[in-house]
Image (cartoon, rainbow, N blue to C red):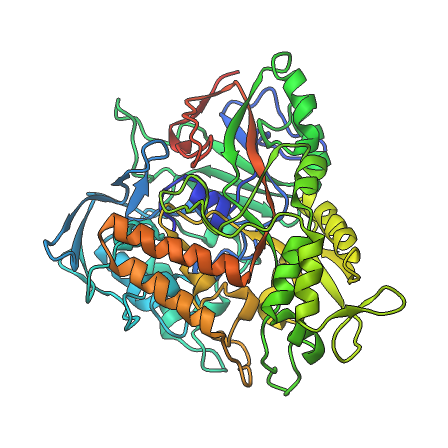
Length: 591
């Protein structure tokens, strides 16, 4: 789940989903977003939810500030998808593929003016990302091979860093190059000192209550102001390394405002009143925006299928919490862990109707964990077209039947009833949940829909874990399928459908995994070990077949990825996989 490029869609859609961009004044008020007398170029970001933390390794939210304030050693070109220099100006790979040396640029500085050296790189990996006391999903994708060994990192001098791995690891360069480098001079004391519970003080550093002036980064921007539930204001980092062809410091846009607007209707109104410069186009707004694009001077870009996967997932966790209480009602757990039950639900959902009604035809049915544009995507996977007769057949085979009231009951006579959890920020999700409730009622199931805001929703999924089924999504990951390793790996931090004990949380009792989960582990490990592309494609083909057979995620419909951007934003090189703003430091505004 590493950041494989500086401003690419994989970062925004997966780690810090940036939904909209726009413009705001220096003197912010609740009602006035533009100041026509402003003397510096400014751009507004609209996001449906604010940041959950300013501590990157601890972040689990899509909505974060890190894409603006941090960079890694390398970045990915949004058009060609090639790796390009970032903090590292060059790199060397040994013939046996087990050693990589990165050469840092000269005169790199942090946003507080301190020098950035190889010590910061070693600190970021050895003391933070690979620290067993720091619960970070990055550890999942950096484990190498069957042994799950971490790479070793050492500084050769102030500008050269060596990474060594025990065996060839196909995604290593893209992943290790994209992970943000953290400031050792600020954060190392938090690693070296412990709190009263014996945990590194780092775990309580840089929460959203930290004054933003204390947050030090190396990206194109630094945070200038944060008003909870309202906005984050960024200003250009005067020490940012990148320059244009004429040698002028980048970025060109002086300020960016992340306007926190939960309602997509309100986002649309702000865009139409020219308070925002860009907008993620929802299906219900498309026709209006298409008619208004010329008159209001903006362009709608179409990236094809969104890189965000959308699905429902049942809680397959059969463990008990530290008090001995089952995470899931054992009766429901027996249903959810029955493959026939999950397949019946998949056949029972009318995805075509979701696409045509909720998405207004501006959607694509998803049938694989990989994006259709991925070179590893396999079209021959099992597809679950709407087929109530097949759903009923599978349920009968699993011992379910309808009672005299038309309710679906299990072999012991327990009515099939469960709660479907989703978040309110993406407007289509409650609507999708309502149709799923209706579709499954046709099978005799009672589905109760519960909606909540994003951060409490994530807390429920990943910490308390007392949920039945959820409707959600994951960002499109990266170019390499291994970017989703921490979702699929049985001990991964995002293995939500059957998540084991996590660092810093009370231990679970009697947690177990299915044989098919271990088979997925094996496939993804082998896929990372193989360098030969046809062999990797065959492995990931088997992976996709297995996931569609077992259905830990029942994939639904994805939006067409439509972005409306005002024509005053110059320099956009739109990319289907990286969007409109992957080259943000090079963009400029004209009024």
